[in-house]
Amino acid sequence: MGMYGTLRRASAADVARLRAEPALVQSFLYGEAAEEVEVRQPGLLGFVLRLLPGKVTQPVAGTGGWENGPWPAPADGESLDLDKAWHGVHFLLTGSADEVDGPAGYLLAGGEDIGDDGDGDPGARLLGPAQVRDFAALLAALDDDEVARRFDPARMTALGIYPDIWERPEATDAPRAFALDAFAELRTFAAAAAAAGDAVVVRVQ
Image (cartoon, rainbow, N blue to C red; front, top):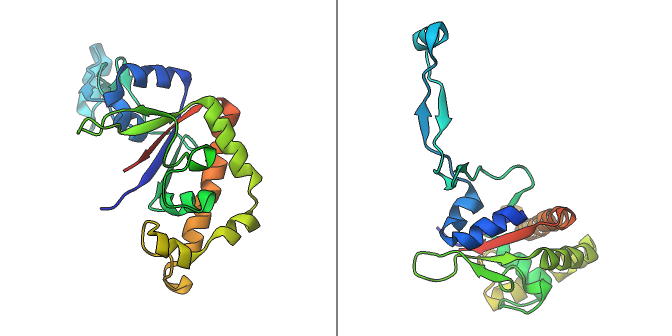
């Protein structure tokens, strides 16, 4: 199993819906297919279609999240899966394993608690558009060389940065590339979200 970091951009309409029905956070983050029903066409067309393999279907309104249809799976660029690199990226931003105030700490803290993990605890956090802009600006200000200098496998291991891979040989597991590539993907994702004026839902679980 393990813990994974997931982020998805949220429009103003998405945010309003999530606040009204926070139990739908999981559906929003990962997308959820609507139930499908077979559609029968009338007349000659319907007769011909029934002779062919396959069926014509359409989504059932009110399933998969939205009242009038599903929350579709995220489009390209709308979501980011940090996999298990989320804590390594947090370390690159903060030098810490723990929650940190301000934009540098947004992967672990900050924003508005939203959703429900099933035990009554928040399932995710919502970063508003202004917070997303601040986060994107912070990420953009760090060039690749600076980020690479912050990678410290011995320190990361001592702090218990998840997962415990950082001192493994580069040739075997490439832990440096794992963290730095995830950081670069986060920077690109945040920049696009900020440019669109979107909020972002963050979940580490």
